[in-house]
Structures are given as structure tokens and as C-alpha cells.
Length: 489
Figure 1 (cartoon, rainbow, N blue to C red):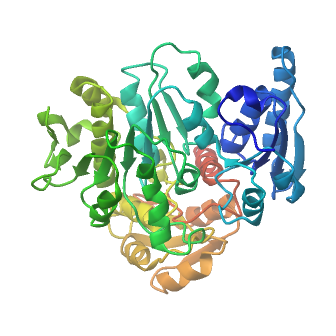
Figure 2: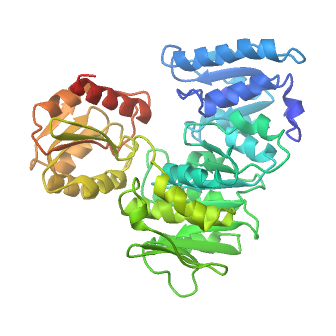
């Protein structure tokens, strides 16, 4: 029998399958499992990865199970059941609810089976939207969404120090839902939403108070059968909005006009690296100035030179979009300006790790599309001074433009073994040497034999991390440790 989702109390004793555990200790799978256990659900956690691959996540959940048994003595707390390395059909038909986590495709036969049997399918994001008592601000896009989300969150902390920043930024918002429900005054919430998470909001009838689309480029074509399908998923951030809610769009992308034509909101604003066209309101760059063009605000609110830690054209756009969102959320110009000057950025995004014997090492592990790598090459390249570490698992994306930039800026390409290796090798051709690496240690060893004074070793994969690494953050952490070893630390 399907669960009645009108009240959190109905999770007590409910049978719930969590599909997709994942390896992030505060990610969707672990966060959802903890929240469900805490509210008395009987959960089955199933994932195609093996118990050994998911050992840390399993240990994390069992640690919290033990704690909840002691803490919530007034309700039944059930031990979770793990079904790992496989999925069993009965776990999707003989339950009250299925929690589908981000790595699980909506086309999954088991998701389809659950829906056919009338079993509700939710995500940690959709449950949070159902129960969160305060307005939610949301960010999606191919590039820049994590930085924009984090920057927006820092601005919102001027309003409330306990502002929630969660979602695809590796933290499930369910980790914060229970204490939010106890708050008497509004707490700002900003969520980074991937296209996969957005799919779970379709038909919910509740959308973000402010929805921001940073940009859309070809990506995840291993998951979506076309770019149009991927764009459709990104547009879902606006689909459940009401006319009085706010939509923020990138004026520098032609496709944004089409997206805007589908938006229900009557309050559409724009951000741009150029002067906004007549009739468009929002925030834009004019040389060194960041400028408001709004009904209630006109003029310069910050400068590009203020962005000490947000270098590059893409980060100017991140700053403009986050500032626009913060403005409509009630953050003052002075507070926005202060945050732009002090925000340190996020790890793994064009992050300079160290300079060792005249060689700069840069961690850009979160660049999982060709456009992300191109942005890093443009920032750090000086026509042959780069040793590029990239490659991994293919997402069905073209590499021709990336290869052109690599040939122009790099002396050597070190490519991780994976499904993207052959396509990248063909695109790069024979103009620069290519080395295959089976591990981060091999990649760094290959780089160390080639580097010379003034070089930059750039980890900027342009692909997914599946295969050699747990995830993109594991990949970045391994790079950082290898650099620290070079320093003798």
C-alpha cells in the first residue's frame, strides 16, 4: 500500500526501498537512509555496487542506526537491510515507497516496475520540497552551479548564519530538514540541483521561490538520448514555479530565449557579461563594473577586481548570477559586495594546490565536461606551458574543440584509462605526446618526468570519474596527496 505523504508521521513503520546508496557520507543515499531510519521507516538499501565498494557508506549508516536506537526510544527504529551487488524486483513492488537517488536513471526497469505497481517514487530533494516550511532557492546548469550555489549561500548567511546549502553539492537537504521544522523564523535554503534531481520534482506542484539556470552545454549524453532531452531536464527547475516566483537566466546563451518562453514565472531576470538588451532586467558586466539594471536598483554594485578568488570569465558570470539571486532574497548591496571580495571559492575548481620547484599544480577535478577544461586551459595556458591530466569515463560528448585548445596550450596529455581514452586520443591526434595512466600515481609519475621550470600541471578531466576513482572528489584528493608528497610533506 502506498504511503500517505501528507505527513512525516506516516513514515513510522512504512516499508521503503532506498535505490542507490552512493559513496558520499552526506550524499543523497546516505542522507535519505538516515532520515528514513530516524522517522521509523523499515528500509531496504539496494545498490548495484558491491558491499566492499560501499563499505564506508554502509558503516556510516550502521553507526547512525546505533545512535538513533539510543536517541529515539519513543519510536520503533528498525535496522536497515542491505541488498548490494544486485536489485530484487520484490523490493520495488512490495513496499510503500521507493527512494530513487541521483545515479539511478528514470528509465530504470525497477523504477518503471515500482510505478507500474502504484508505488510512489521520490527523492531526497522531492521529500525536502514537500516538507520544508521555508522558501527554497535552487541552482542548476551544466557549469558553475556548485560555485554559484556556494557563493549565493555565503551571501545569504548575512541574513541568517544557519543558511542551508545542500543538494548536488554533496549534502542531502534531509540532513537539515528536522531542525528546520523546529525553526520559528525563516531560514534561507539554497539547493544545487542536477538534471537527475530535477526529474524527481516533475509533477510535485511546488517549485523554487527563485530558480537559476547558469548555462546549458552538451553533457551527460550517456544518460540522455539527445541534447534536447538533457535541456528538457534542466528546464524542470522552472516547471513547478508559480507566476509570482522568480526565474534567472543567462542572457549570453541563445537557447535561453526558448527556455524563457516555457517559463511560467512572470518575473524573469537575466545576467550577462555584456550590456543587457533593451527590455531585459538583471545584472551585467561593463568592463570592470558589475551593474544592476532593475526596477528598484540601478548602477554599479561591485567590480571584477573585487573577485580576488573568482578568476576567469566563467566566475564573473557565477558572481553576477549569485548576486542577482541574493538581491531578490533580501541581501543588501553592501553584503553582496563584501561576500564577493572574501569568498574563497570551492575546492577542486581551478584550485591552485601548490608550487613545487617552480612548477604550479592545479586541481580542477570538478571539470567533468569539455567546456570546463577549456575554461581552465584559457585561464592557465600560455601556449605550451601545460601538462594536462584528463580523461576517464565517456559521457558521449564531442572532444574536437577541447582537443584544439589542448594542442594549443599543452606540451603533453596524460589520459586516464577509461571509455573516453580512444575518443580523446583520436581527437588529439599526434601533435603532442599522449601517455595512458592507470592510476593517479602513474599520471603524476609521467608528469614528473616531463615538467620543467614555469610549467603548470593541470588536473582537469573533462569526463566522469567512474572506473579508477570513487568519484570526482576522490580523484581530486588523490591528486592533492600526490602534490603534497612532491613537497615532502
